[in-house]
Amino acid sequence: VIPILFLALVLAGCEMIEASPNSADAALRAPITSRERALIYAADGAVAQGNYPAAERDYMAAMSEGSGHTEAHLGLAQLYLKKGQSDKALPVLEKALEVDPDHAFTNYLVGKLYLDANRYADATGAFDRGLRQQPDNLDLATGKGVTEDMQGNHIAAQMQYLRAMKTNPTANLSNVRTNLAMSYLLSGEPKKAADLLKNEGSKAGASSVTRHNLALAYGLLGQHAQAKKLINGEMDEATRQLTIARMREYAEQRGGMKTLPLKPRMSADVTTQAPVAKPAPKKVVKPVVSTKPTPAATVQTPAVEPLVDAAKKGSARD
Image 1 (spheres, helix red, strand yellow):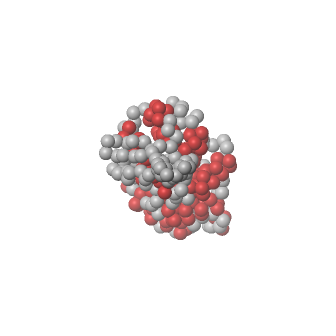
Image 2: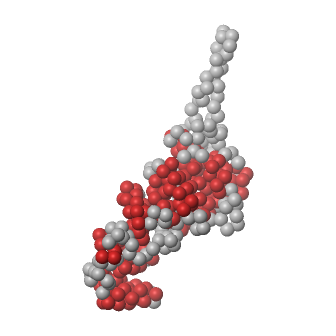
Image 3: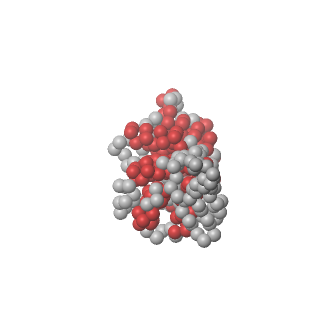
């Protein structure tokens, strides 16, 4: 739904999700067998030694025990994710959900993979299941918020981010604030975004996503000198102006940003116009001025690299 250029959204680092079984009927399961526990222990050791084939074999053997526990599934899935094999990790996690549908950590990992695959309805379902178990979990709420933004449901996304911040006041909220700022930008509220990020985005250690989101907010507000300073040469001027123009276009199509600053001239082959009043008829004593602006020229949007934090593309920071 949202142009790829605007996907400067990041998931949290899954530091707060309990990896242990936590569904309603977990207490009813039989204890994990000693053989399964030994296989998982051996697989974990093989991962630590970098012996991935042995780890894969032992995790699969533990899964075949069919004890109703998902530790082996999660171990194997995270091994595949570590190797960048999301296509292998997803079916393993889906099998884990067949065993324990409400497991919060499993639903978080599945939700992230669905989100990467643009399966937004499935991602929403996964994050919702996890939130039923851990309603105040920062990571699950962030995932749900990103999914809402990706579907254009920006108000719903903002509610997720704000609630997550309220219920986790002592956590590192940098990613959540960055996502909330982008959500404000997508809903046509650049001043809210700038106010939210102006302190954090100006710090020396601010992430590139945070700085770029703040720079975009400043650009939309016409504060181009501040925007350029934040970008610090990481983006050429034509790309920066194109980003601003496309963000305006998105917000206008959604009915946001009803009072727009003048659109910038982006390059020699792109022409934009400010609103121009029509002249009054000569014979009319009291001139009548139309408030309808002349339409701006169509913006040709060449392919642009997405403003995505490199860490997000790697997906899980678990």
